Length: 110
Image (cartoon, rainbow, N blue to C red):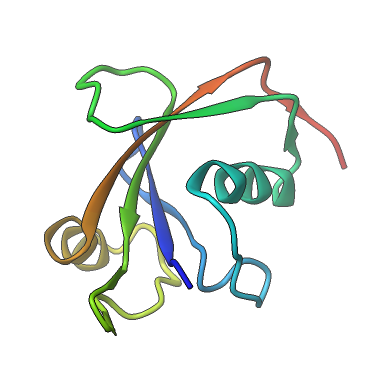
């Protein structure tokens, strides 16, 4: 079961760890996880496209890291997305998967 961690391109903070989406391990593609994470905070009406490189720009999106490297977890489940040590560990220990581009209007419901 794949485990993805998303880091916001603009803030540099960890926005989510698929090992703990509302208390459950989310199973799906990185794009599906990004959409589920956004829906959980009221963000709807967006599209998500995974590209397999870092765009090195300020565009809206998420850097995707895979935390289940080999037969073990590269980092513990992330609960504090602003903890710089956790952010550094994800970037250092996890496998970079790519970048999810976010398109569409930002609307809040809920």
